[in-house]
Image (cartoon, rainbow, N blue to C red; front, side):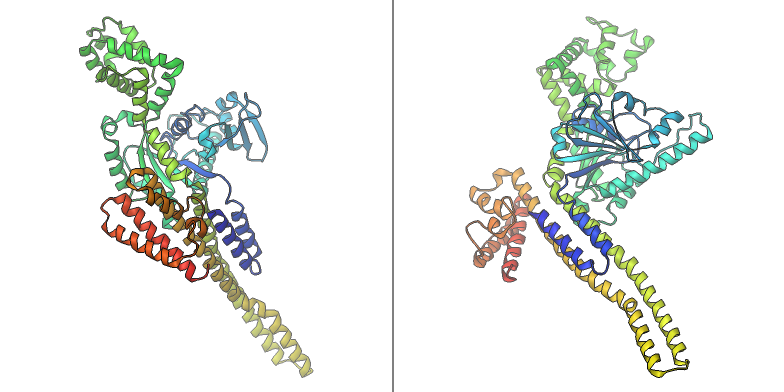
Length: 563
């Protein structure tokens, strides 16, 4: 398993550093202990972009509080589990370390702009929701408050309120950015138009990580597309344009509508009874009236404007009741359009169409493929990024301090030597004292060299592990490509490539079942796939062929080195 490789590499690097920096060795061992923990996915972005709505839609439940102000937002951890007390399913972890089980009343008390609410929120470190949700078996989901909060100019505030609000906002901003840095992957929630601060955010997120990990750690989610008919009609083209604007910082860009997803879920109750009532009513509205209605909600809600419309056989109040069945006018318009344009669809069919338009099915598929199926690789990348960053800090900070200490020791040596040279007394005693000073200051003089040597050795160890991680990620990509295009590969190719790419284990015997360490076989198969890679026009087959060439090359080199 790749986790064993990462864990062993960190332990070896820790042993190298222990004689020169025990604290750094302890940090590396702490990172090694994180290898087998669940993948952490943070939902991040600026405030008021719909992050909590995305979390609820992903979990198919109303869990995260929506519509909260940025001043009272909390950091919410969604973890798999069953709460000890169903009526108090949320654990509140306070900043002083204490923990309380709490229910909906407490969560409601965190909403608002008053001073008491701010004081309560200021004491909270995080809220932890334990949910028996299959989605959370694969990863811990962290819903963050967001960054870049705007000031509400219309709130009447006291000086105490303003001071506390500013403190809380700054802490939320800092904690959100810290979570972004610690997360194994992020879902970046943003609006319809990519802005310069989106790019700055993503560049900051990628800073300090190597390119292979940055390329697969982030997915962008564009929210509220129910208000954009042009996006709904062609989401792939819109996503491609958005991805281009983000300059390759995302592994995927997915347009979504939490409102459509939530409407489909709620109208599904009682075997789609709500959806049946809604689409039956919409289909009974006269076509000319419905066409006029769908251009603007004002045709329905304004007494004067609606007075000239014929709603028969329904009444205007009945149509208003239909409208009240969904939260947003844009969602009502979309459901009505589906219902009247395809009258053969039953309620479940309209619901399925609504769910597909919401984009969350595709988002879940992308998350499963990009994050969860390779969660162990993502986590290992994040851990290795942290380890490499730690070595860089040691190299540029600690070694500088050691050189300064060595220079100071050299000055002391010169002063003491000059003093001894001019001193009277027994020559043998002076020589003994000079030797004593030489030995006492020699350790300071040698410390920078010892540290540099240890860091060089530790870095070589970690770079070797990182290279193995990158190669295994390439294998994973190839295997995922094959699984997404099953019919492109023959049974014989599946028999060869599945084990080759590590499906049944990362050991040589698992990659080459029944073939042992046959260098000639690897060379022949590498040549075969090299020819395929040059001739293939299908991009999926070409990617897989190139991955096979790389993996056979690694196996050949490993045999040559005796590994």
